[in-house]
Length: 151
View 1: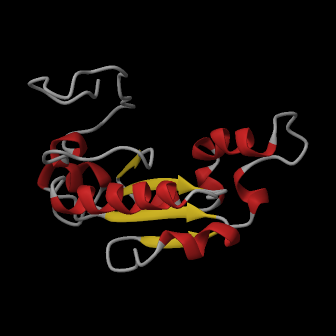
View 2: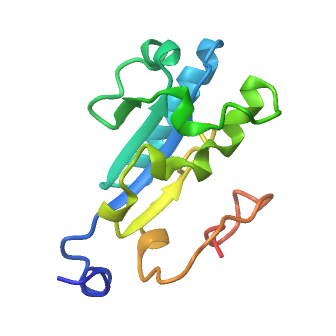
């Protein structure tokens, strides 16, 4: 079945949401990652794959996400370029664009990046329906707005 047929029928679709949680020094940041994943499953009704990319030092702080998401420990070098001139913590801001180095994105029909401080408050499945073009989230959309904040 082609990708277009999977989008049209919903049969055999593979959707992915990925998060990046590296350099976790504060346990509150690890809690946010757990809450994010839980909200995507519970209130977001998302039943696709969720992958949390993390470094070896942070993996133990993420708690037990294994039932809701795959926690994948990756080498720092997969997510950023060593000769980048930013401070170490800022280098990971570009990690979301290098995700193809850690996850085979070709296996998925739709891929979405989500910051770990985002909570789903309602069903997010419509964001994955009939997607044929690049979509991006607008910032500063009020949470009480009637629609979703994707363009």
